[in-house]
Image 1 (cartoon, helix red, strand yellow):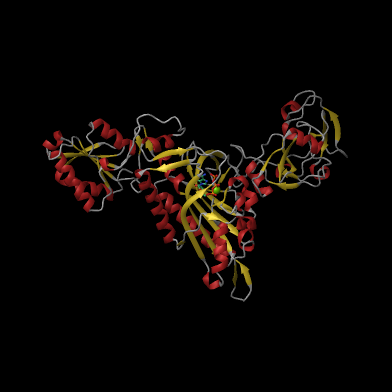
Image 2: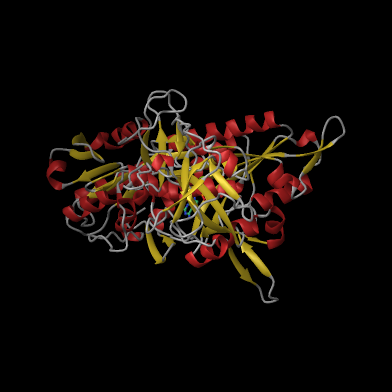
Length: 573
Ligand code: ATP
Ligand code: MG
């Protein structure tokens, strides 16, 4: 490609809209442009990187034995209702109406469609295992689209789905995908690691996310350097001790706490109840009804864990009037003792606790000597608290650390209840019985992966592309483009020879100052730059520079061979 023939609108200034470095570089290097919040146009260079990432994904999916399909983006809401996700995803689903006023769902992922396909096409155990994948545009009505391609309303995802006869076979399909994901992210030049993950509204019981460590990541990863445990904070547990047992009274005792409406206030004199002896009572509205959540006074609720427990992400903290209506008291005096009308979920750390203090559902009063099991017998137990840095690892007791990361991929073991049974994906087993397919599903955010590579691989001058995904691997930079000049003749010759050898090369034929050309080449981040100037050419030399490396003079006659050698050795990276 000739630079003058394509569109690479590099920017000197950083656009105000971009908050994080990779987003700034995407715009400055002329890879994308914003249409409006959460929607981006890919320019020619952006498309080239995108296609390379997709190709790596495609090759590794094919290698794992998965079959490529292409599913409709416009999907009937009925199958989403059948799986229960029409409600569970709620406003996160883009919906539209056609001319006949019929509603359609814009695919945010495709479990419902693929299971419908399996229901129709898979009849016998002989057809299993089967894994299908597609690379396509997905739509999500994100609450906060931001950071460019990282969290967009419309993005490209690779989604794959495995169907197996048994749990054991499904585990093997899961493992194949897990391995393929490691190969994919490694080939993209990304430092990444898998962590145990929450299964969210997709459901299921085993799941890993592939994380790229980055300060700007939206995920917090809890990990143990000693034993290798790593989990998303949404899922992480620790070996923190349960609540110690205390004195047990025959019943809770009510005491006056005028004006005391926070955990902190109750820790002060005259009450002096330490936070770890208090029960924090939170009220949420899920499915239009109040739900009470109990965690220890010194713990924080993890809303992702709550979503798993409630089976939906559609819930919100109750408003004060709703709370008063339900419990007869205001926040600060709430508790679950004697509450039978509403579901109560209590964090595992409170299991067996006694001698605890909690609000009495009467403004200005609390109970003490509360025994969880005795006084709140209807509570359902769940892991609801957020793990903190420094807590002991559940596996090896060493202190846990927390680090931020970007989720680029996610693998789930789903089982058969969530989709196969609901959407009728059954097969005839060898023994003649009808059984539901055991499913797994697997996603990679292609556009998010692209931006994560930039987030991880850059320097003060711009992007530093790994060779495998660079828009062009080699940039030829003639300093002076007068046609017929020795410089331009050589540039053209090398350009033609590299093209003939199948090298991905761009010729910067713009009539620009050398400084501008070098700056642009560095900003866009081509792994290898070949500078051709009059001075060095007088010595029969050209200048080879790896992105981020030093300048090496090479003989003009050996330039093509040298570039090829450099590419074979892995280029700049
Ligand atoms: P997140 O927790 O970041 O919202 P998710 O868990 O909802 O993501 P999945 O349903 O697991 O996402 O989707 C698979 C992959 O698609 C994710 O690992 C991520 O790389 C990508 N992805 C998800 N949502 C977006 C988005 N809004 N914009 C860009 N990529 C996305
Ligand atoms: Mg996910």
